[in-house]
Amino acid sequence: MAKDPASLRMLTGDRPTGALHIGHYFGSIRNRLRLQDSGAEIWQLIADYQVITDREVAGDIAGNVRNLLVDNIAAGLDPEKATIFTHSSVPALNQLMLPFLSLVSVAELQRNPTVKDEAKSAGITSIGGLLLTYPVHQAADILFCKANVVPVGRDQLPHLEQTRVVARRFNDRYAPVFPEPGALLSEAPLILGTDGTKMSKSKGNVVELRMTADETAKKLKGAKTDSDRVITYDPDARPEVANLLTLIGLCEGVDPVAVAEEIGDGGGGALKGRLTDAINTELAPLRARRTELEADPGYLDEVLRRGNARANEVAEATLDEVRAAMGMVYG
Ligand code: ATP
Ligand code: MG
Image (cartoon, rainbow, N blue to C red):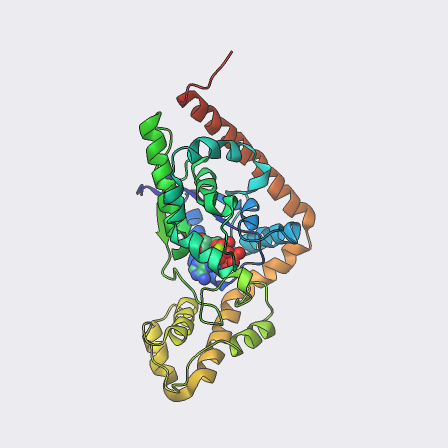
């Protein structure tokens, strides 16, 4: 990864399948904001076509796009610095996918462990064409703006590797057009949900950023722990308890081991109570800002309109470069 923050160009994205949760907040959003503060160029994708990779219909896609827009801005993404855009509004992205698909093999796509996991969690037995190829579609999302840094959770690492492979093969076969972007993993690359598996919008095991303090308390009360009353920090033997301690550590900026010692034999109730307070304190400003933003739909529409216009300009320019590198310039 390049060292000078001003030479960093970040792209990251979320699927509009629901509202953002604390897994996103600690797993990715904090890094997005750090990069924004350090002067990096920021591209924030709302990956709407990716919704239909693991389900038949897109559901309340417009409502969920709005949720992502509000969550990201409320968390601190600044539309004056960041380009926020929807994939479906940028047709050149899909044009980039065709040459990119020619650079990968079916066997390589079938080996992607995240695609297999996602198919399994969605109960899909026969993987469809879009689910199989979406890591390539995502390569176009990342490479069109020549991003060189991508803040992600751990599940995204195989996809980022696929993007690097696509960039390298394109550059080798045609001309050096693309950077090979690096992943930026957070200190919390895999936050578990209340059922002890990866926290995911699609699974309902989430603490959403937009929840009220009471909803947060209720949700965390139901979080899975274990039968040992004494709280200890042991991620291998006690992953659910360690996850809750990690979250307290992230909110309060303290060591989870020290938190475990403080709680001691207070048990799961004390652990969850402390986490509820920590999360509600951490998210209070974001939640207040969220309410303000929701009252101003005209502003939100304008942010997305401007972001989509800018993304189209840059994607068209990259597509021209790609066609030129391939010799597809006529007349
Ligand atoms: P879905 O269930 O619809 O796939 P999701 O909760 O997995 O939703 P995505 O939109 O797929 O969210 O992911 C957006 C980004 O957030 C990705 O970079 C992903 O790695 C990161 N992320 C998602 N869930 C977690 C988590 N539990 N812990 C850390 N990072 C996460
Ligand atoms: Mg996901």
